[in-house]
Image (cartoon, rainbow, N blue to C red; front, side, top):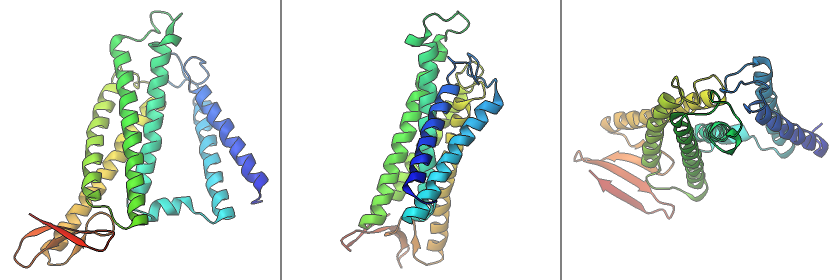
Length: 264
Protein backbone atom coordinates (compact mmCIF):
# COMPACT_ATOMS: atom_id res chain seq x y z
CA UNK A 1 0.00 0.00 0.00
CA UNK A 2 2.71 2.47 0.94
CA UNK A 3 0.28 4.62 2.88
CA UNK A 4 0.41 6.15 6.33
CA UNK A 5 -2.10 3.55 7.51
CA UNK A 6 0.30 0.76 6.55
CA UNK A 7 3.10 2.44 8.47
CA UNK A 8 0.91 2.73 11.56
CA UNK A 9 -0.12 -0.93 11.30
CA UNK A 10 3.51 -2.06 10.99
CA UNK A 11 4.49 0.09 13.97
CA UNK A 12 1.67 -1.41 16.07
CA UNK A 13 2.74 -4.93 15.07
CA UNK A 14 6.36 -4.21 16.06
CA UNK A 15 5.14 -2.91 19.42
CA UNK A 16 3.04 -6.04 20.03
CA UNK A 17 5.82 -8.40 18.91
CA UNK A 18 8.34 -6.59 21.14
CA UNK A 19 6.00 -6.93 24.12
CA UNK A 20 5.42 -10.60 23.28
CA UNK A 21 9.15 -11.34 23.11
CA UNK A 22 9.65 -9.65 26.47
CA UNK A 23 6.81 -11.60 28.09
CA UNK A 24 7.59 -15.05 26.73
CA UNK A 25 11.31 -14.68 27.54
CA UNK A 26 10.62 -13.83 31.18
CA UNK A 27 11.37 -16.82 33.39
CA UNK A 28 8.69 -15.71 35.86
CA UNK A 29 5.89 -16.51 33.39
CA UNK A 30 7.25 -19.90 32.31
CA UNK A 31 5.76 -19.64 28.82
CA UNK A 32 8.85 -20.62 26.82
CA UNK A 33 11.56 -20.82 29.49
CA UNK A 34 11.81 -22.60 32.80
CA UNK A 35 13.08 -21.06 36.04
CA UNK A 36 16.72 -21.44 34.90
CA UNK A 37 16.13 -19.58 31.64
CA UNK A 38 16.35 -22.67 29.45
CA UNK A 39 13.99 -22.83 26.45
CA UNK A 40 11.12 -25.23 27.17
CA UNK A 41 8.86 -24.27 24.24
CA UNK A 42 11.03 -23.79 21.17
CA UNK A 43 8.18 -23.08 18.74
CA UNK A 44 6.81 -20.15 20.74
CA UNK A 45 10.30 -18.80 21.50
CA UNK A 46 11.70 -18.84 17.97
CA UNK A 47 8.49 -17.78 16.22
CA UNK A 48 8.15 -14.82 18.62
CA UNK A 49 11.59 -13.58 17.63
CA UNK A 50 10.83 -14.36 13.97
CA UNK A 51 7.68 -12.24 14.18
CA UNK A 52 9.62 -9.31 15.63
CA UNK A 53 12.31 -9.66 12.94
CA UNK A 54 9.64 -9.77 10.24
CA UNK A 55 8.08 -6.59 11.63
CA UNK A 56 11.43 -4.79 11.51
CA UNK A 57 11.98 -5.95 7.92
CA UNK A 58 8.53 -4.66 6.97
CA UNK A 59 9.28 -1.27 8.55
CA UNK A 60 12.62 -1.03 6.69
CA UNK A 61 10.85 -1.87 3.42
CA UNK A 62 8.11 0.67 4.16
CA UNK A 63 10.60 3.47 4.86
CA UNK A 64 12.49 2.60 1.67
CA UNK A 65 9.39 2.59 -0.54
CA UNK A 66 7.67 5.66 0.92
CA UNK A 67 10.57 7.94 1.84
CA UNK A 68 13.25 6.57 -0.49
CA UNK A 69 15.63 5.82 2.40
CA UNK A 70 17.34 2.44 2.12
CA UNK A 71 18.47 1.89 5.71
CA UNK A 72 20.43 -1.30 4.99
CA UNK A 73 22.30 0.34 2.11
CA UNK A 74 22.99 3.40 4.26
CA UNK A 75 24.52 1.29 7.00
CA UNK A 76 26.54 -0.69 4.46
CA UNK A 77 27.81 2.19 2.33
CA UNK A 78 27.86 5.24 4.61
CA UNK A 79 30.98 4.14 6.49
CA UNK A 80 33.07 0.98 6.70
CA UNK A 81 31.97 -1.53 9.37
CA UNK A 82 29.07 0.71 10.38
CA UNK A 83 26.54 -2.10 10.01
CA UNK A 84 28.55 -4.34 12.34
CA UNK A 85 28.68 -1.65 15.02
CA UNK A 86 24.91 -1.31 14.69
CA UNK A 87 24.49 -5.07 15.16
CA UNK A 88 26.78 -5.02 18.21
CA UNK A 89 24.75 -2.19 19.77
CA UNK A 90 21.52 -4.20 19.35
CA UNK A 91 22.97 -7.51 20.57
CA UNK A 92 24.74 -5.81 23.49
CA UNK A 93 21.42 -4.25 24.54
CA UNK A 94 19.79 -7.70 24.49
CA UNK A 95 22.67 -9.08 26.54
CA UNK A 96 22.27 -6.30 29.10
CA UNK A 97 18.47 -6.70 29.29
CA UNK A 98 18.63 -10.49 29.62
CA UNK A 99 21.24 -10.29 32.40
CA UNK A 100 19.23 -7.62 34.23
CA UNK A 101 16.04 -9.68 34.03
CA UNK A 102 17.74 -12.83 35.35
CA UNK A 103 19.32 -10.81 38.16
CA UNK A 104 15.98 -9.25 39.07
CA UNK A 105 14.16 -12.59 38.97
CA UNK A 106 16.69 -14.62 40.97
CA UNK A 107 18.70 -12.08 42.97
CA UNK A 108 16.60 -8.92 43.26
CA UNK A 109 13.24 -7.99 44.71
CA UNK A 110 11.36 -10.32 42.39
CA UNK A 111 13.17 -13.32 43.90
CA UNK A 112 11.17 -13.20 47.14
CA UNK A 113 8.99 -16.26 47.49
CA UNK A 114 11.19 -18.47 45.32
CA UNK A 115 12.39 -21.84 46.53
CA UNK A 116 16.00 -22.54 47.39
CA UNK A 117 16.59 -24.21 44.03
CA UNK A 118 15.31 -21.15 42.14
CA UNK A 119 17.26 -18.60 44.18
CA UNK A 120 20.49 -17.50 42.54
CA UNK A 121 23.81 -18.19 44.25
CA UNK A 122 26.31 -15.43 44.95
CA UNK A 123 28.36 -16.51 41.92
CA UNK A 124 25.23 -16.57 39.75
CA UNK A 125 24.23 -13.06 40.80
CA UNK A 126 27.72 -11.67 40.27
CA UNK A 127 27.83 -13.18 36.80
CA UNK A 128 24.49 -11.53 36.05
CA UNK A 129 25.98 -8.20 37.11
CA UNK A 130 28.96 -8.88 34.85
CA UNK A 131 26.59 -9.50 31.94
CA UNK A 132 24.84 -6.20 32.62
CA UNK A 133 28.13 -4.29 32.65
CA UNK A 134 29.48 -5.94 29.48
CA UNK A 135 26.18 -5.42 27.66
CA UNK A 136 26.03 -1.73 28.59
CA UNK A 137 29.68 -1.26 27.62
CA UNK A 138 29.14 -2.92 24.23
CA UNK A 139 26.05 -0.83 23.49
CA UNK A 140 27.63 2.50 24.53
CA UNK A 141 30.91 1.89 22.68
CA UNK A 142 29.05 0.76 19.55
CA UNK A 143 26.74 3.77 19.49
CA UNK A 144 29.67 6.12 20.14
CA UNK A 145 31.65 4.63 17.24
CA UNK A 146 28.59 4.86 15.00
CA UNK A 147 28.26 8.56 15.85
CA UNK A 148 31.94 9.21 15.14
CA UNK A 149 31.88 7.29 11.85
CA UNK A 150 28.77 9.15 10.72
CA UNK A 151 30.47 12.40 11.71
CA UNK A 152 33.42 11.53 9.47
CA UNK A 153 31.26 11.15 6.38
CA UNK A 154 29.19 14.22 7.23
CA UNK A 155 31.80 16.72 8.35
CA UNK A 156 34.96 15.70 6.54
CA UNK A 157 37.36 13.51 8.52
CA UNK A 158 38.07 12.56 12.10
CA UNK A 159 41.75 11.93 12.96
CA UNK A 160 42.75 8.57 14.45
CA UNK A 161 39.31 7.04 13.99
CA UNK A 162 40.82 3.83 12.66
CA UNK A 163 43.15 3.53 15.68
CA UNK A 164 40.26 4.16 18.06
CA UNK A 165 38.12 1.59 16.28
CA UNK A 166 40.86 -1.05 16.37
CA UNK A 167 41.58 -0.53 20.08
CA UNK A 168 37.92 -0.52 21.14
CA UNK A 169 36.94 -3.52 19.02
CA UNK A 170 39.90 -5.50 20.39
CA UNK A 171 39.01 -4.53 23.96
CA UNK A 172 35.40 -5.58 23.44
CA UNK A 173 36.53 -8.95 22.12
CA UNK A 174 38.50 -9.50 25.33
CA UNK A 175 35.55 -8.46 27.51
CA UNK A 176 33.08 -10.58 25.55
CA UNK A 177 35.42 -13.59 25.64
CA UNK A 178 35.57 -13.31 29.44
CA UNK A 179 31.81 -12.84 29.46
CA UNK A 180 31.18 -15.96 27.37
CA UNK A 181 33.48 -17.99 29.61
CA UNK A 182 31.71 -16.89 32.80
CA UNK A 183 28.14 -16.29 31.66
CA UNK A 184 27.76 -19.54 29.71
CA UNK A 185 29.70 -21.72 32.15
CA UNK A 186 27.91 -24.57 33.89
CA UNK A 187 26.78 -22.39 36.82
CA UNK A 188 26.45 -19.19 34.82
CA UNK A 189 23.16 -17.42 34.08
CA UNK A 190 23.66 -17.93 30.33
CA UNK A 191 24.35 -21.66 30.51
CA UNK A 192 20.79 -22.59 29.43
CA UNK A 193 20.14 -21.90 25.76
CA UNK A 194 18.19 -18.63 25.67
CA UNK A 195 18.48 -14.89 25.10
CA UNK A 196 21.61 -14.45 27.23
CA UNK A 197 23.34 -17.45 25.66
CA UNK A 198 22.71 -16.28 22.10
CA UNK A 199 23.47 -12.61 22.80
CA UNK A 200 26.75 -13.41 24.58
CA UNK A 201 28.04 -15.54 21.73
CA UNK A 202 26.61 -13.15 19.13
CA UNK A 203 28.44 -10.19 20.67
CA UNK A 204 31.71 -12.12 20.67
CA UNK A 205 31.31 -13.15 17.03
CA UNK A 206 30.50 -9.61 15.86
CA UNK A 207 33.43 -8.27 17.88
CA UNK A 208 35.76 -10.76 16.19
CA UNK A 209 34.45 -9.72 12.77
CA UNK A 210 35.12 -6.05 13.59
CA UNK A 211 38.64 -6.74 14.85
CA UNK A 212 39.43 -8.97 11.87
CA UNK A 213 38.24 -6.26 9.47
CA UNK A 214 40.46 -3.65 11.15
CA UNK A 215 43.47 -5.97 11.06
CA UNK A 216 42.78 -6.72 7.40
CA UNK A 217 42.79 -2.99 6.63
CA UNK A 218 46.11 -2.64 8.44
CA UNK A 219 47.59 -5.57 6.52
CA UNK A 220 46.43 -4.18 3.16
CA UNK A 221 47.76 -0.70 3.98
CA UNK A 222 51.13 -2.10 5.07
CA UNK A 223 51.43 -4.17 1.89
CA UNK A 224 50.61 -1.19 -0.33
CA UNK A 225 53.08 0.96 1.62
CA UNK A 226 55.87 -1.54 1.02
CA UNK A 227 54.99 -1.45 -2.67
CA UNK A 228 55.62 2.30 -2.66
CA UNK A 229 52.00 3.41 -3.06
CA UNK A 230 49.86 5.58 -0.83
CA UNK A 231 47.24 3.53 0.95
CA UNK A 232 44.04 4.49 2.70
CA UNK A 233 43.66 3.23 6.27
CA UNK A 234 40.39 3.74 8.07
CA UNK A 235 37.87 6.34 7.02
CA UNK A 236 38.17 8.83 4.19
CA UNK A 237 40.94 11.37 4.78
CA UNK A 238 43.22 9.14 6.87
CA UNK A 239 46.06 7.38 5.10
CA UNK A 240 49.28 5.57 5.86
CA UNK A 241 52.21 6.95 3.88
CA UNK A 242 55.82 6.02 3.37
CA UNK A 243 58.25 8.77 2.39
CA UNK A 244 61.16 8.45 0.00
CA UNK A 245 63.70 8.11 2.82
CA UNK A 246 61.98 5.02 4.16
CA UNK A 247 60.24 6.57 7.16
CA UNK A 248 56.55 5.96 7.54
CA UNK A 249 53.69 7.53 9.38
CA UNK A 250 50.11 8.67 9.37
CA UNK A 251 48.94 11.54 7.24
CA UNK A 252 45.51 12.82 8.19
CA UNK A 253 43.45 15.06 5.96
CA UNK A 254 41.58 17.38 8.28
CA UNK A 255 38.21 18.88 7.41
CA UNK A 256 39.82 22.29 6.81
CA UNK A 257 41.99 20.78 4.07
CA UNK A 258 45.27 21.08 6.04
CA UNK A 259 47.42 17.95 6.24
CA UNK A 260 49.20 16.87 9.40
CA UNK A 261 51.86 14.14 9.55
CA UNK A 262 53.26 12.02 12.35
CA UNK A 263 56.42 10.19 11.39
CA UNK A 264 57.53 7.06 13.15
